[in-house]
Length: 173
Image (cartoon, rainbow, N blue to C red; front, side):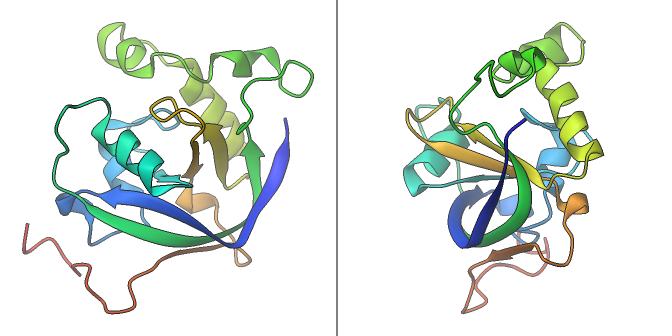
């Protein structure tokens, strides 16, 4: 497994849904239904290196974009699994070949555990902060999933909101 550092203060982006905009660094939204690298109940914050990748990831192939607030983040993480160049059998165990599986179908229709969830379990268990991986929605784009419970003192995940425009609770949604 290739492990790398992110940052210091590298800029990433995320489109916040109105329901979860008051908790921009929590990963609680992804925990409700799960995601590519997190099963339901596991907090995961999904970010993108570019605004276009963030938009394409948020749309998930929809023809019209649902409401969202584009937010920028400053990220410093000591150790993440770096799959950003895709699967390479020289660097990665064979299990990682299936990182880009059809996780929704496997979890929701087949009622099985997607291989990508098992990979995330491994990353979480060894204490890495997240996974850098290629976007499947935006060619050439890179995403980062962060597992907030694994963050330690030297890690930094901050939403850029200098004017305090993000909501502080769900009362407005």
